[in-house]
Image (cartoon, rainbow, N blue to C red):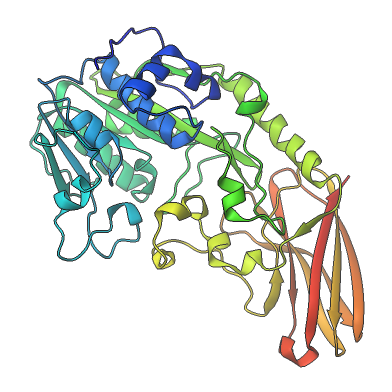
Length: 443
């Protein structure tokens, strides 16, 4: 079914819940994707990329296009079947850490991708190539369009981002466009970890300007200040919260260590103009809304005692910079990505939690059959940053046989997160640990 581009809405924007109700969005979602609204960021990215290509008249049988970091995403088939020729690219290799591109040794890239093609899709115009986003195997001025869906942030560091954007500029035709979605942070500077950057607006704009690819003049950061746009509660540090329960309800905005983030979409073009400005509609209002929401979450969750998972900080998944991409990563992928280091003597380590500018009160309960001496430490670090850990409070606790309890209180800082750790120079089997629990509340 044909969808006409109505040019009524600017789809160079932040992901917002109200987008899912917009008639243009719903038309594409229902008639092209054959889906209902999920309020998931990934669904928003796919539909918004399609809408931007549609509004720029790039989805027709005269167009040649490509996708970067494509995996087996649905856009490959939905766009590839509607244009003259289309190439899906990714690091399609058998030993990659990304499940979305991990092929069998005896399998071709195209077979790997096309085995997920929907029934009835014409794949004759679709090619598939293993390709590094920093070195594009396309001739100069050969593509009418290209796109990537939250692949950009996984390339590497700044030099890698600029290499990719420069290559995109080289392969695009004069009137070509690059539609890209990526991770967008609120109220925090760019999170610079190889393999999982999250960007602030200023950093993204500097990358675009350096590369000579410029976004359209207006970026819409407007969000209705409603409950559904508030960041999804990060309940992972709390004991008893299972992964299926945490991901069962989708939300456009997520939160990591008190920092909200979501997806954004840019339409980039070649330009000889210098010092092009980017107007960000309602950016300050949205930032303020997100800051208030994050603080409100702390009060909502921790105004009464909550039990923290006493070993969540010991798990590699909790210490990975890619913890929010676990569904796309293979079991052995931790070797590829930066891990937060911990003290090897810790047998208790909660996850790092954001408490805003509240005073937090921890209660540690330990039951053991033998006497033991343990060190209890409250650890502070900056939000999201992997380095900069600092011990802000430390007490030695002499545990008696049976039950022992220790209470710690600390006035937290607004840009820091905190974890409670317990260590012992003795082997924990020596004092026959029966049970442990950690509670925390704020006021």
